[in-house]
Length: 107
Image (tube, rainbow, N blue to C red; front, side):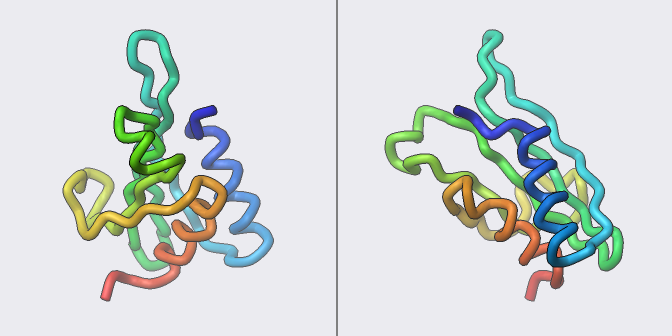
């Protein structure tokens, strides 16, 4: 089952409300190919410190290699699609990993 934008946004908001209390803005879109929902991609912005993270949860032809992992990375802004170093994690850990990046600027 793909991780779509509403579920990811809800996971981030729930975890943020419990722990971090960051001011987040979401720029996420579902990825739909030939009517099939494959995941979502886009940006999450922490307006407190202007840290931006790009997220991609698409289930692709590399699914056998990545085994249910999603990609996330720092981005310079909400239009930076080539950004910084790619990071991968399991979907269950994605929200907590994204929130960790949003807390501090890229070093």
